Amino acid sequence: MAIFTDIAVCLRRLDYSETSQVLTLFTPEHGTVRVIAKGQKRSTKTRVAVGVDLLELGQVVWSAGPAASEGRLSTLREWRQQEIFPNVRQDLGAVMAGQYAAELIVTMLPETDPYPALFEVVCKFLAHIGAGKPNLASLVRLMWLTLHYTGHLPQWQRCGVCGRGVEAAGPAFFGLNTGGLICGECSGRVGQRVKVEGPLSAALLAGRPERVPGRGFALLDMYVMHLAGRPLRCSEAVQWAMLRLAGAAAAAGGPAATTIGEGTAAADNSGDGMGENRDDNGNGPGG
Ligand SMILES: [Zn+2]
Image (cartoon, rainbow, N blue to C red):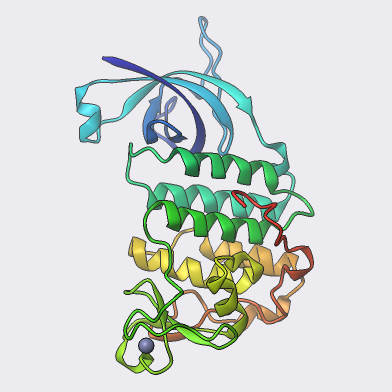
């Protein structure tokens, strides 16, 4: 039985039995780790149950037998809370952004592969979002960096078919299979593509899709869904919450993130929704 220590953010919590939970923890040195937390839900005479909250940071000790590498659960030995990020819990938009981020990391990262730089980005993101903050822009930045660190960064300098560059201000297409730019001339030859309007195209060229947060989210969410083979559970809730908070009720009929073939990455009908609060100066996570 090997003992491991690290710091971790709790990304997922599932009830396992009356008294136990299975936690998915994101650590810098050991990647995502699934542990069973026995007795987490009930105090006994000899110990006080210490719950582990979603999206809190703690020091963790766990033990794993040789079978852990074959997908067997490890066992949580100790959790010392370090930071609960109260800012995340005080605002609906931040809660939704945080939950989407957690699901994104669990979905995109292979278990136990370490991504220390992405771990730092996630901690910065959790510290940065909150009431009155550009939460959607921060989430889009995090999505972009997650794609970067997992080797799926969208390529927007040249068309994935003919190799031509994109006009900075012009609309273009995003090829879901090629993972990047498809020019207008080649678009007819590419099956799964999404139309990208000029402002988002320019933002992608600059590597800053969070400058157009609503459309940036819709596009990257669609790409993540394509990579994962299924939509993220939080996707619709994020769109709903962000649009509602931005006062864009009119966007109710906007294209859903299920548009495959030729759709438009536009979840927002009123500018970019979070435009008032956008944060272009690298104050977002990892920026
Ligand atoms: Zn082309």
